[in-house]
Length: 452
Image 1 (cartoon, helix red, strand yellow):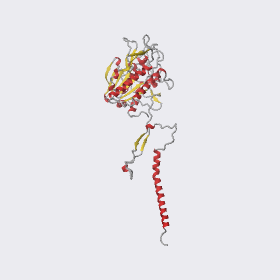
Image 2: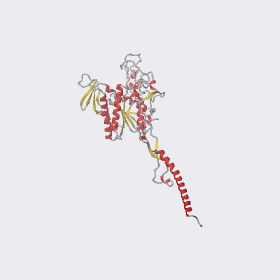
Image 3: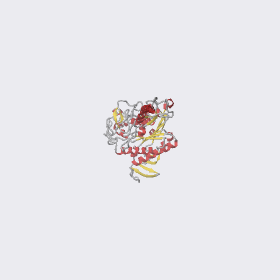
Image 4: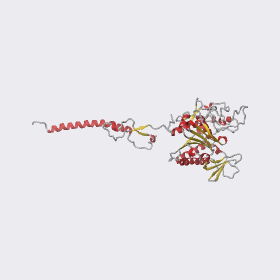
């Protein structure tokens, strides 16, 4: 029979179809395999969960569109509605913990000295008063897990351009303020535009080049108080539920507020709340219940931070606030004895512990700051941080004026009885570091780098 067999034609047809199928399948596998590998690389399949599983920093992973993929319309044969695969960015560096660290020797000179800064209070001008040992000037604070850069005055001025900054509190607040003024003065000369009160307790400076003002408000309790005097009671009077309006009245015009207090709570005082006396601290002869000052300190700070939050919200003006934690004193024996604070070097780590009253004062301040941050969590116009300087200050017994709170105290020879200041800090000195940390937190809040 002539012609081809229909069965042979069908067999050839099947072989042809089979060959085409396998070629198609091979091409399909080659096409799909890279896509599958890409998918598994960026989106790995979940594994069974176990109680020990952790996703560190998972809430810090940022997702952004790929910057290298062409627009959908440019992809040959592509779907114009298809999205480019996400680009996973590395998590940000952890925030620097400036609380714990050590003092290391540093050869760099301080930014200023007694001749370049005219704002140093007489009692903290240790070099001009003849302090012979100058090694206390050559130490820097090194946090354990990050780096604290040297203070950059121009950065501070640029970040706070057109802002009003206020330091509120006792003489430690003034000590910190004068340190900052001295460091900023190395790049921009301030103008004293306001002064009032005994011992210049209320002052304001203006940095014209950046239209920034820095003020100091004397308010040793932060809340309303009556300070003891020769003509008044031999104790302080504190109203724990009423903020001190001498500074709080200006809250609507302040952008940055730095609070610092604590030492005045060690003095005899009667405490009031709701117009009635709660009790007192060390007030023999008065008909009041003796109570400790720890709870009182917490109540005063709670009232202060509540006023900050409430008035900031009402004014509509964003405010950044800091609480500088309690800085320990370093008296060794009587305050008027020779050698009351004789150290000339920092403590080594572990040589001196933050404990007792110093630790409790710091703890109360940090806890009140954290509670206020929680209360203001939904309010975007208010930022608050504890400037935790207690430990780094504890480790600097060498940084106080001591007898050099007065000019040349031993010009006529060493005396057994001499006034000593083991509370405040020489300028320049360790307190400059507080403002270095202040700058780093402000930089962090404004998106700047704070770690290296």
